[in-house]
Image (cartoon, rainbow, N blue to C red; front, side, top):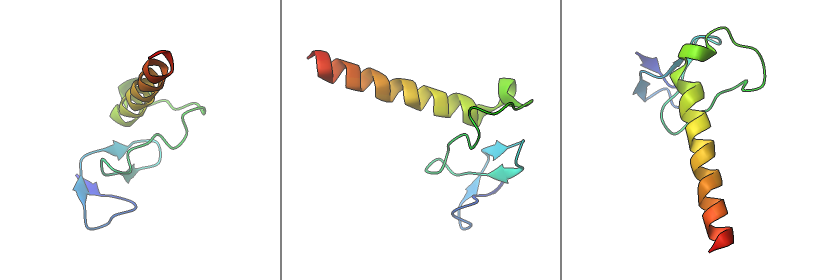
Length: 66
């Protein structure tokens, strides 16, 4: 556990192993999604960011078709 890079008053367990930083849920976003990262296959930040993007895209597609 560490403290969020942008919010030092918040303790979080989401840590970027590549950059050795922690991010709270509000700040959670992969910093280098297009650059190689040897930790990517086990990185919760990457998967959460990716899932958020897919959910946002699904909402926009439903609104456009409805």
